[in-house]
Length: 139
Image (tube, rainbow, N blue to C red; front, side, top):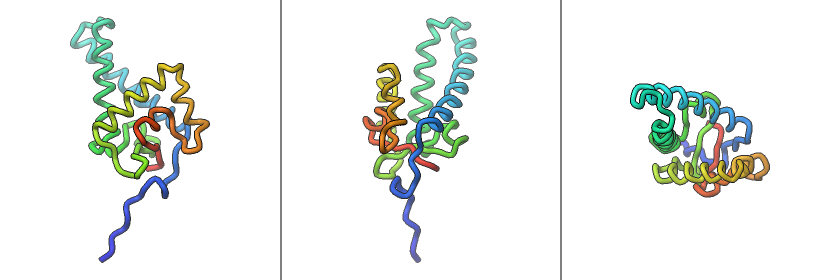
């Protein structure tokens, strides 16, 4: 009995800038709420002590959901029916997801040029995608 070949990036539409921003905004709103609640419980709302907590929550969230554990979809990605895959079409490992997260920070620190790159790149990749060797595709 023949089995269907798994979908790869070559047969899946790459996603551009605006849907990716929408998914990220959904994720950030959820993370801000969770982080604020945990900060209020653990640090009595002290923002300076809670900033490290926010960083850890974001790192764990994105690493989990971008990796094979979350099948390349954060909650915002699921809402917009998109996912992150390697350029080979495979799911990301935790190390791939970590590398993409670090690349995203670099992309943002460079006055968001690395993020805006998605809008102008032929493969719709930001710097973080190029660093980690990923595409964002239709799920």
